[in-house]
Length: 314
Image (cartoon, rainbow, N blue to C red):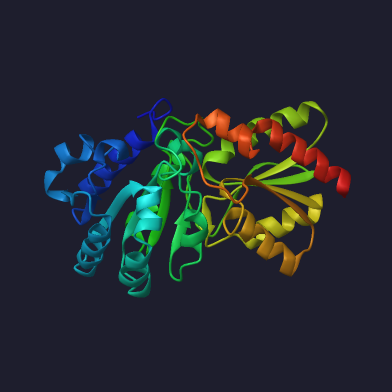
């Protein structure tokens, strides 16, 4: 089956159905946002016995999921990122991470992709705060094929996990053969002038930027991180040693997320200049993705200009 033209949330729902067909312990938990998550009607129609809608009660959803996980179930709990991470942070901390229960938390419509719902729903913090939590794995797939690989891994490995889920159709970066290893980042393009590090939503932007830089004779090395935690330090160090400068790009605050992880590693093991592109310590607003990309400075043009500036500083 080709997933090229499908929305990410549709693939999330279909993949959950596949996982349930293989293992009846896989469950889908929703907090009254199943249509937004892509599990209604896909999952609730095909596997009604594996589908639980708790209503507008996200904290209860996490507690219920932790109890189900203790009984051997594999619950996938989805909601908007602001509700799946920020609103239920204490419940996740105690019932999932501290208790080390096998709960899979899915934050949908991360960062600026929450545009129409405005600043209250636009969570720029989830990668940072979930990454700071002990025992928690943190993933952010960039396309449908990586999403499927990540979900299959999540369903077969016992660990507390947080995954960002982009909802709309996204440009395809990988293919059906992609395999996910949280300990390994992916080198999408080879280069020697500058290293670009991305995750999730920003990866397709960097792919475009690399192609345009190539036309100008600039060889950018592009590293994509499916996993923010655990974090592949070795590939980053190898690349930074070769290029001598790094640009990070994330659909998040630059404080504590992908850029934070990169700076932590390099400051301790290979000090080089790093430019972090993303949200500069700000809240969101009702606006289109393109407007927010331009305002917060991490569109393709910003990536290109940041790379050129970093090369000049070497």
